[in-house]
Image 1 (cartoon, rainbow, N blue to C red):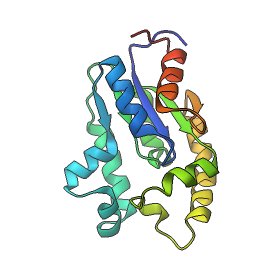
Image 2 (image 1 turned 90 degrees about the horizontal axis):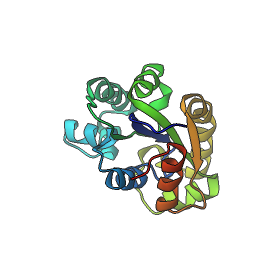
Image 3 (image 1 turned 90 degrees about the vertical axis):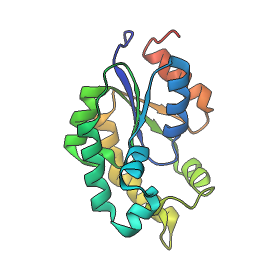
Length: 174
């Protein structure tokens, strides 16, 4: 890929490192960072986990689409999205308008280990989180693959290594 003057959009399943890598890339490039989950939490004045409990996933997804529609990116930026953003075609179309879409992935064992460290993942608050994770991954994987310009497997990489991989593919030289 050639040097980009477009934004970098991070998509992928929860636990793949989108938020941490997004913060790192924004710092390295000196670009603004927009995190759709943070924007939704701010707009609704409650954490994402509470939004899911009190308002439901459908309302969250509506807010996610609304945030993307309103997002004004006037210079190259880092856009970090929630794991389910790709489930709506209008979201994917908007993400393509914004920039290069990078899908972060990780194997199931790595995701379970990472996600097991926190209890703030509303979609995994089930009797069998491992089974739920597998079901969600199977459901979303084709959408991630279709949306992504390229993919980085984060399973055995540090955040620095993931950021460098993205910078290498996009020929960013800061």
